Image (cartoon, rainbow, N blue to C red):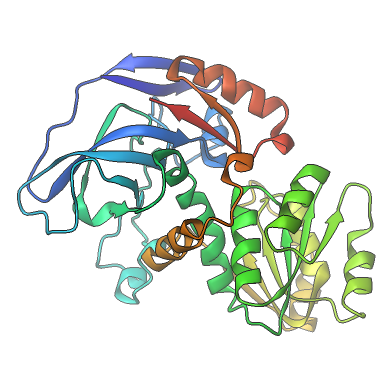
Length: 338
C-alpha cells in the first residue's frame, strides 16, 4: 500500500509498504485525509529531535472504519467516519497514575516517536478510535489540532471573568480562542497575519493585535485598563513569543505554553517571581478535549473550509511541505488526501 515517508531533512518519498493486519481488539481504518502538523514541518526541516528517519508523518486523521476485529465492543461500525487519538500511554508513570494520560512520560505520538498515519490503511486499538457522527472524513482531520488548543484552555483554568490573550492564530491557537470564548472569557488574539486575525474574530476573539505592526505590551495594557491578561496561551513556540507571554500576563496570572521553543528563552526570571506567575505546560489533549471539539464542530458554527489551506495527493506532499516552509505564516492546515 501507499505511504508518505520523510527520509531525511528536505526529502519526501511515496513508498510501497505492507498493509497492516488486524488483531484482537483492533480496528482497521481506511485513511482518507491526514493533516500536516507543525511537528511534521519540523521533521521535514530536520529540527525534530524526537524523530528517527525515515518516518511516516501525520497524526491528524480523518478516516473510515474498514474492518473491526474480534473483541471490539459495540459502538463501532464499518463505514463510520472517525478520527484517532494519536498518543500512547503506559498506564504506569506518574502522569498516568494521576489521570493525565496525555502527558505520559513514555508517550509515542503517531508520526513522531513511531510511524504515523500518512498511509492508506492504519490499524489501532479500538480505544484510540474516536467516532465523529455528523462530521465528514475531511472535517475529522481537523479535530486533533483543535483539541490541543481546547486542552490548553483547560490547563489554564479559564473562566468567564478572565481576559485571555492567545499568541498565534494557527489551528491550535484558533482552538484555544474557540474554547476560551465558549467559556465566556474575553479573548485577545495575536498574530502577524491580518487574515488569520480576521478569522480569529469570527471564531470568538473580542480583540486582535497584529504583533508585527503594533506594540503588543502597550496594546494589551490599553485593552485591559492596565491590568494585563489574566491568562496567556502561547501557541507559537518562539523565544520571542515566550518572553511576550511573560510581559503581557497580569500579576498572579497564568501562562499555558503549548508550543515547545527550540532554544532557551528564559530571560525574565525576576518577573516570574515578582508577578508570582503560574506557568504551565500544555501537552497534547485528553479524551474529553476530543469530545468537546467534536461537539463544537457538530453545531456547524465553524467555517471549516477556511481552515484548510490546501488539499494535496501523496505524490505532492514533499512540494507542499517545501511551500509551507517558505511561507509558514499563511498556512492553517494542509491535508493529504488518500
